Image 1 (cartoon, rainbow over the protein chains, first blue to last red):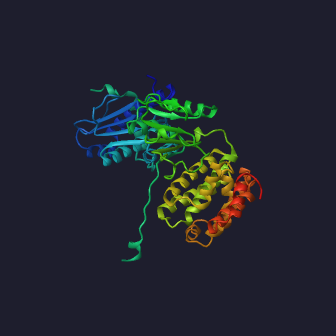
Image 2 (spheres, one colour):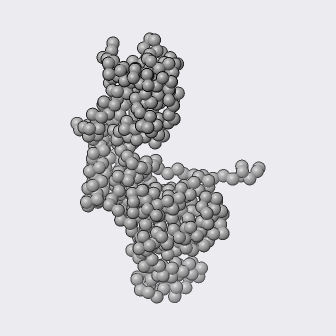
Image 3 (cartoon, helix red, strand yellow):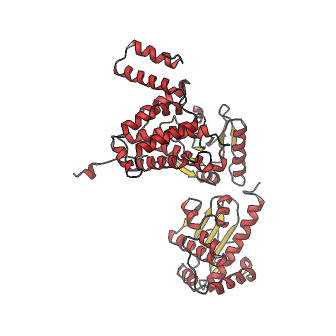
Length: 172
Length: 311
């Protein structure tokens, strides 16, 4: 069966999902604000971000110590929160930072299944992670309101090292 | 009971509207959400139709949807939804009943999304500038004039309510913003949006005398819709100047009547309109006098104009 989007789109999205997933795991373990956010989520919370119909997936689960764990494309069969991007073209707009997560949701390109408060929380998490991943001019376009976190550069280095050296989905 | 409680209105929201770049990428998901697996894609078998079909084919890759491509004249035997490419003509009666999705451009009659259209009230409308045909300013200007007529006539209607007004104002604003850049994709997209706004407004307030006559003359092959609208719209504007609808518009547009008259002239120049102006005005005069006192002379004059003979 022919897959949605061309091979460049699929490759780019696959890399971006991997980087974002690992960044959520790395930042969620090091940034005090993100740790607080994840601690407030219910125990065993699972989150999936995917591209409809057969695009890449990003699965995050909180472990017993309420820290986020990136599960690659393997995740709970019925996640607590599932955010689905409605097409590869819309995913490209989101992950090339042409539009922010909130704009994407507002335009009906990001469909959410699960608790609305959890969806808002995860959008905040994604925004925060993007401020660590991206230089300020690009991050300004990618997030709703840009806030420069404390010790940003130190945290940015830690997040990027976490992305490169973490075992991500293979972590047991 | 005070006035605000006595005031009541009804508003029928139009179809789901997806507008802007990547809007059409939403189509496969909308079909999937409604459980449509085998939609009939109706298109004209010309170069433009083939171009649009290629786009739809690329979009449906990976989804479980298997579209059946067909022309208007040869409907497929089985389908559970209908996707109409472009706005030219209504699909035949055999397609009525199935959920319908319209992919529109800046070339519209503005009736595509109206409830009054014959059985063609769509579930969703898509306006994606990347799928517009190579530009034709005359078509775009004609659509703008038709949309402007529907919008201004709706301002005169008693059924106008705050929600209809917001659609009307949005449509007029789109046309004003697009008139100076009608040759660009931005301007064309503005006109396409205005045409959809006009259709949704007309669904709620009904069609006025000018747009009804324009439709009748277009169906009879006497004059284009835009020609009729251009010829008779100044009368609508004159009447509007003293009405409540214009008072509302005054809050948003400075000197609306003058501005709209200038806009109409600008659009008519771009669209090359005005060739049948005098004939249409005479014809409209005849229809009015026939309605007041049906005399055989006036009917004969009316028929002679319709047959293309100058009275």
